[in-house]
Length: 83
Image (cartoon, rainbow, N blue to C red):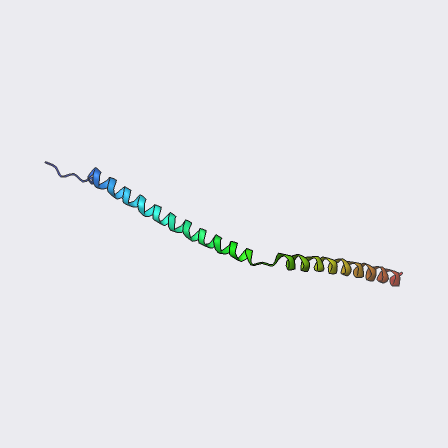
């Protein structure tokens, strides 16, 4: 009888199944880590004070409008001086 150079089909199937289980475990670990990070992100978002943030944004917008007005006034004054 000539010895076979190929692995036994049952051994190959068991190894393939073992590799698949290992891959699934790796994917599950990656998913678990991602889920944990997302839950932390949600908790951080809950801690934000949106009312104060929106108020600060409104104040900043008003400041920008005021600065634009001052820049326009200075440009007009500069134009009139150069005339």
